[in-house]
Length: 393
Ligand SMILES: *Cc1c(COP(=O)(O)O)cnc(C)c1O
Image (cartoon, rainbow, N blue to C red; front, side, top):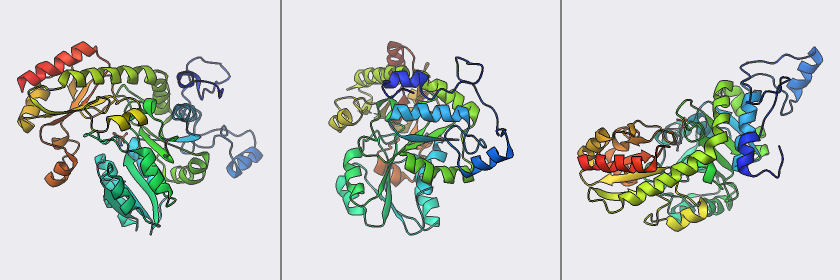
């Protein structure tokens, strides 16, 4: 791959490995193992395998390697490791580098399964975890201490779309030599500049925008070659969260169109946020890319655009939110995001149901809140759909 390529070119050609047939579309190497030319070659490969020396699909596979190289080019990361799901990526990013006695500081507003790892699993193995309001830099400053090994946050929090200042948190964390691990799903890999802003490890659920068509679960961890090969790879190789070659092929093809898709979705999201401003049924419209967002200036500096999700809060609470969801004719009620199909979610009764009422209130997950993942439908049709559904509320 050429170093001079811009990202859109790398998304189409990056990482390509052709077989002896010189296929145009990338091959799916649906194989668990690889044949060695000799016993000596097998021995040598187990001692040291280069990037194209494959041993076993739990360690690596040519289709998976193509995906890893292509997403690394998009993110501007030295290296990447693909995983079976977004949660396998979050778990590996944290667990591969932590040990008993370490301390982690995390933002409180997290995807439910991320919260489970930090709140329930890590403490069982002697890792202490403190939670802060991720938007309050003084809380990060107060929480980080000499034994802090890592900080973890979603750069844009689900579903309330608060934005955390990656560069500012990284400066605080790096003063204590703590790793900055960012779950960057809502920012999307298209708008991310997380590594140049100070993130040491960036994690995506590929299930979201990378697939972008709701077909497969996957995840990826991006970082320095040192972190990926020395810390993450040994953990992944031996614990078994590898991405399947078939999934890698889906994600690889997803990357070819991700830039076009995500930019179109973000443009529609901004238009929807604009159309909902001041609507009589709504207490709040939240979109990071709209000037009404309290952190609009940070968003402009950090990602430039607001992503593909708009959240809005109905005055009439859960009843009004349910009436709105049930009246939608284009958008579907489900819980994925980043899909070609617009998807509406009621976080309080689904994705964030496990939280106590107090926790939900603290995070701004009100009974009237709807998370709306903007798809690839016609923008005017989508706006009309949401407006007519709000009419039913
Ligand atoms: C979906 C999601 C995950 C988990 O990804 P899966 O692919 O479902 O395992 C983690 N973090 C965020 C922010 C997500 O949106």
